Amino acid sequence: MEETVFYSSAWRGSKQFTSRTVRTAEATGFGAPADDYMERGIDLNEQLIRNKPATFFFRMRGDAMEGFGLFDGDILIVDRSVQNINGRIVVAVLNGEMLVRRFHKNFTSAFLIPGNEKYKIINLAEFSDFQVWGVVTYAIHSLA
Picture (cartoon, helix red, strand yellow):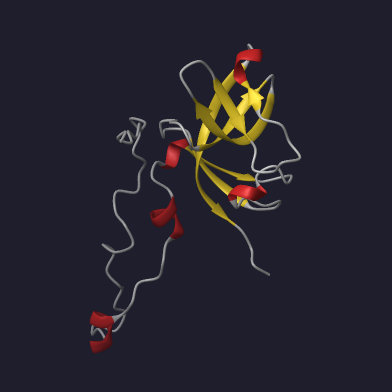
């Protein structure tokens, strides 16, 4: 099993704390006894983003990945620092066009596999201008 390697930038940002480490302000000088048991809200940035400078959001267009659970209008969270390995869903640049496909590599060549039978498998050996732009780490879609 391959180990996942994350690459990050040297810049860590100016936020050197999380919302968990910030205490509540006490304007009256006395805190409420219930403050010790207060639940913290969910911060989606902390939950879904591993490397802020390398993370981008895209809106999925088209039905090419429906078989893999990515639908038209979904928000894709793409991390450029995550290493691309066989089987991951990637945002690829193919002859200047961005595509979302599953990356598959065997001993002789690499392929971009769609999640819909209407689209054909792309053999990357046929293209000279190919680059994996980033790896899709999460997808957010509406149920309504």
